[in-house]
Image (cartoon, rainbow, N blue to C red; front, side):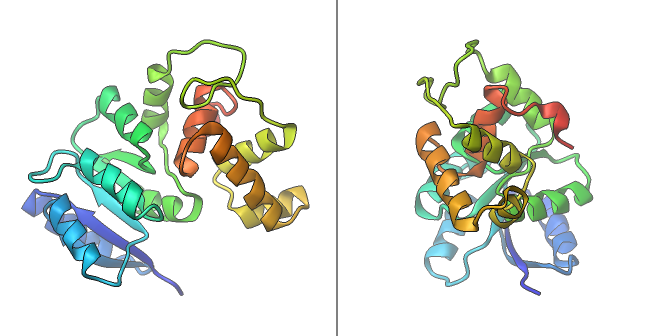
Length: 224
């Protein structure tokens, strides 16, 4: 069984060690690193062949905070899924990090079971947005317009098939699962996904979901 490679970037020593120990007990996880700030993590990446699939990142850290680390990782290592794990549960923090491209946002009082679920879901589907995250996304969205708007507030047209695929993406289906359900090839699904990314102006699946929620293509009541 291929393991999900995970890294933890957290400056609080006790919390970092505790989460690290719990994650190492999960059979399908391989913890590559547990470090105290973003700079150390980037140094490890540049000198190592092991790239994690998913990283858990705190926001408030010395030397390189979670927001700046997210921006750098998005640019240099776009395949890495970033899940924020922080004490900040204010909507302004959540919406800012989601708009920056993170695949999930958790607060530190959540259960370890949700952390594990978030890692597995982000690895499989590209995102994990719980109800708190979706609520923050909805409230931060100010545009009221019957036309679809890109993330840059540009009017765009989507085909019926693109909307259909976008809804299935929001339901956490993979390309192969969407292909099976729609009786088309995985390559065709991948083409539609790339067209959606280009039209909407985002870089990853989390951005597609953000667009879908903002434009009422997919309502958060259907999530979890």
